Image 1 (cartoon, rainbow, N blue to C red):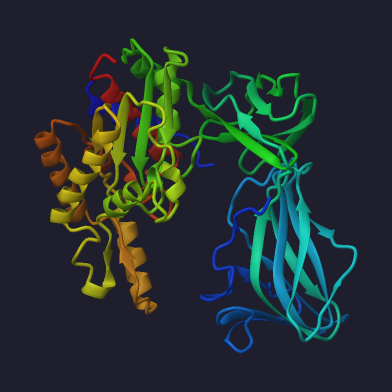
Image 2 (cartoon, rainbow, N blue to C red):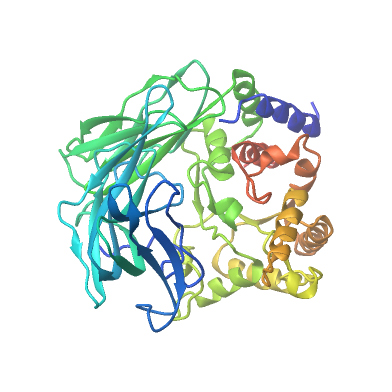
Length: 516
């Protein structure tokens, strides 16, 4: 079967599946300089919520929020909650804090949501015992959100005034809390199984022996299950094998938690035909010796860690070659070749770019193969020049790639493989850009323009020929995919689970081309 036909078969299978210490601050726009930072006051809650821009009022900068109690059926009150980004909170402990001042008493709580057996979301509150007394001076308030024994679908910090008054708040933080010496590691990573079969056991290692460990089994839009075990004398704890109950197309998260430390493994369930097809493709790959692979890239490689195309590819490579393929994923979201070059150059200096630490000790362990995969951020364009120029011009692209290759070659003897940019869902990208322009966004951007991506790939292909590197065309399989939009998330740029599966198939096709 030709590989283009194989891609179409995979897409047919995929499209037949129903869509189903002091830590880092996890919040963006925590100082409200741009907007309300996702604070929401539903219409059925009393009070008014306002985003204020006033450097004389703000604790820091210019932006802050103001919640005012209004008269309702039961007297004065005001209430608002913070909508958090989607994430797996199972087993985690958090501290939420912010600076406040005002009049009255401020009650803090956590809105906790679960999903019952019928798939309905159930809400409950975990309230602080005592309110915070407000004054004319800024004060920092904080409260613990302990989910170490709770399997929630999501949660939200809530603030409330229960009498006449108002509260100004600014500089919020959400931080994970981990006990000293606590550390959890997933020894089992992604497993892919056909429907109506048994899932394997998942092994984790905790930093402390003979300690209670909580396991969470979380499937999308279903009740999360929790069970407990103890780590053995070596710190290992095992989530037992079990029959698969979930439908094809779902990815289940298995989390292990203790002392605030959490590690995750993933279980993907796919149709038997798709499983058999991937097994057949993986069986065509010949690996004679261990391979340690470095992946360098942007958000397409960085997001969905543990279950993206990299993890899927390595799972299938190891299926017939257990433990032979290992990897390091050093991708950083937002990267283009210029920023990647800067991060390489900043190593062993005091200079830094976004997530500089991702490249710490990058070549400490020798690699056998290095993949370099960029494109969307290099070819993005902006409204400031009518979307004409790309962020990285072609002449600069080629020269900077050469410089990055030179740096890599000084550090490693591993062959470098250039992966082409994908064909993105341009209609979605274009509509998003048009909407931003209509809203007056002077920084509006546009991803995915075919001509720009194709020009980028032409430069890469020419560079690969000149530097005697392998070049893998990923653009064509994605461009020719039926119902291409169903391979991407709603932004038209990032891959969803189906897109990651097609990407893994393309990677397997590359590995079939040689004996490793």
